[in-house]
Amino acid sequence: MNNKTELRALFAAGLLGFAGFAFAHGDVTPQKVETKGLSPLGEEWVDENPYRAPSEDHDRAVEIGSSAYNQNCARCHGLEAISGGIAPDLRELEASYDGDEWYKERVINGAVRDGAVYMPRMADYLSQEALWAIRTYIESEAAKR
Ligand code: HEC
Image 1 (spheres, rainbow, N blue to C red):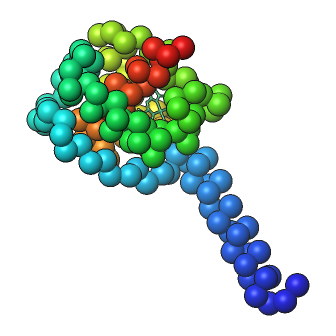
Image 2: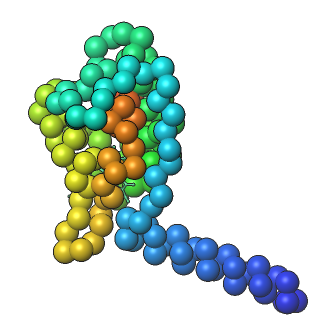
């Protein structure tokens, strides 16, 4: 191995190690979500998915939520909302007031136990419009089952 390939191998190993570390600690950098076109909801969290009813908002929410989900949730909850077993399958959450309540609780507070971050507080990084759009996308995937 010449110096260059050796360096490259070391670099790749370092990156892999880093990814493993970041994952284990739930230390991810959420990606900004563009929510233009969705009805704005203000600062205060609403209690129920405001984009659930069939409407233009609903259709836009599914579209925006799809890419937002894949960028911010899929690495733990699975591509296309199909859990690979690392984290709960979000399609199981009922599309109802109760389901919304638990969804909201988790995205706002994350899952932190004994100082370990199993799921980051996603609402610190993403707007409630983005998070309800993600919820709407997950519901549309659940309906396909
Ligand atoms: C770093 C991994 C990770 C990321 C990223 C992540 N989650 Fe989670 N999530 C988890 C884990 C692990 C749990 C289970 C928490 C527990 O053990 O109590 C969970 C639980 C949940 C729950 C509760 C599900 C249930 O059935 O109890 C919801 C809702 C949720 N996540 C939504 C999201 C959404 C929406 C995103 C993206 C915006 C997201 N999560 C990003 C790891 C993650």
